[in-house]
Image (tube, rainbow, N blue to C red; front, side, top):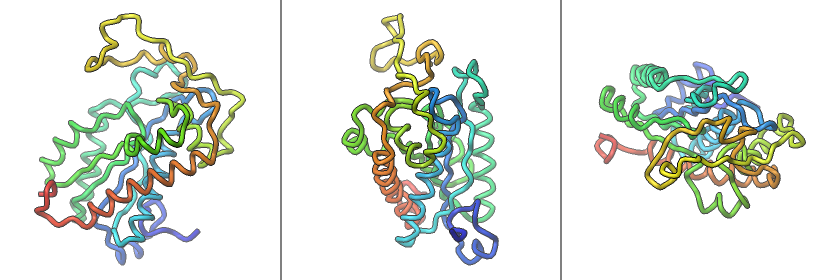
Length: 256
């Protein structure tokens, strides 16, 4: 496959000078255990695939995105007892994002869409600070929250982590890296303190205690076909965001 001008990891400088993107897309994942059957890089694979396919669809409609290389690390502080899980602090994530935004603004790219693939990543405070500091438009897309009606229609029980949805996506994207015979049931041990189980109350899950096989959701009904359908649908939804952001004119809310 030829180098795509809208994927920075592939594109050369001649392509980029001719193409002149006006918007960056940053996939952001995590490196952590995903039950016993999925790769540690599951969130990175998913975020990258969604970002690239969405950019392809948006590019075909005249948008000017450039997909940056994925950030492979996220906040996994409650999983650090699991082998080779890598976690970065919020301060580190803020510094990385600030350097990315600073670099882009030097090249007159003042629009950034983050495609997030990890539920433990919290970007809102970072975006509030950086948008004010650099005068850019930063849009956050948690792809797994985008089309709940399609998620419900595609999967019997999508799961929260390494369940049917994620297993289906990796069966589609990297089938050679999936070992279904090793998969645990993805069962969850509920909190024993009743007062922290109500809506509006939150505390981190001590992951190995609450999720013995590190999964959350039954992966047994996953199929590559389901993963392909969901990837196509969610990428099309992200593409709508990219087309709109790329076409936006300065002064149009919220692009001020």
